Image 1 (cartoon, rainbow, N blue to C red):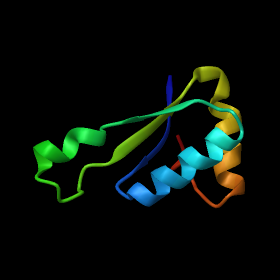
Image 2 (image 1 turned 180 degrees about the vertical axis):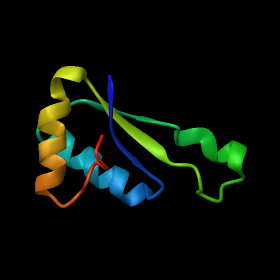
Image 3 (image 1 turned 90 degrees about the vertical axis):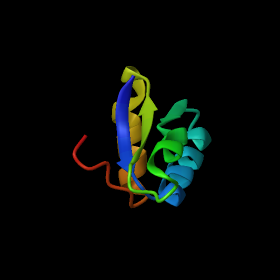
Length: 72
């Protein structure tokens, strides 16, 4: 799996997941429950992962919809 997106904004993660699911690209969100460790203040980013073979297409889909993958 490769990291596609890293952000502290949960709405960006949700939008990206919806876009990828609409294109039948499986994705997995990491660090969802890390807020327990940080005290729920939202300073630690969440990561969105995709399969290696889907990374190029997923990155293009996000870019086409205005979500930059931060050079990953």
